[in-house]
Length: 199
Image 1 (cartoon, rainbow, N blue to C red):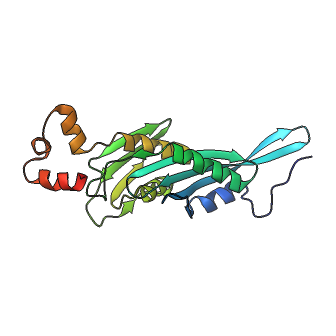
Image 2 (cartoon, one colour):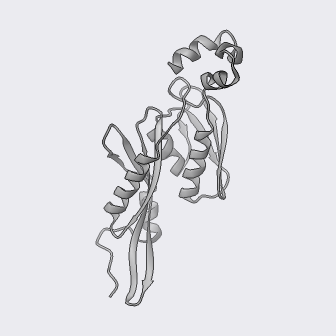
Image 3 (cartoon, rainbow, N blue to C red):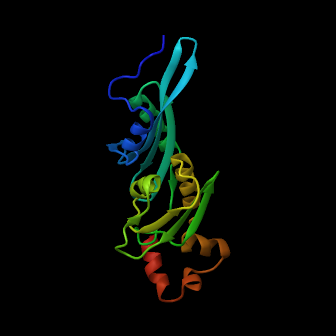
């Protein structure tokens, strides 16, 4: 006989839309995690349908490290726990300019998902929708302009955003790779301020 979902469980699109904004919870080790989306999936078996829940979670320390993970289980809390554990294991470090925005504009792609991330002036805030906003808030970026140009599937959007973030590079790393000084890339005025921000 099919096992019925518990009271309060998210069902269909209603549950997905309700949780899309994300929930703040303490993930331990000074990490903050946000629930991007949760979806109820069904497996048809001999006795009827067997329900499970799939969760997508983003984890970050708001200081330049962020990761994402997906988990599936028969109950919502267990799916979220699995997704959070996977997110912690896949964290990446993203260089930030002055600790508030990106160093340069960048694009990212995953499957049908395509995103454009642009650095922004101080005070701009996070101009991004849904899944991308959760990534930036947990990462600790304060000023960024982002646009999704492809798939609106939360998984594709998050993975495309991470693809873009992995392409970000700081002036110091570019200068080291090219055997130059930071001042040669940015000019005499910007170099001292940039080195202080990177330190």
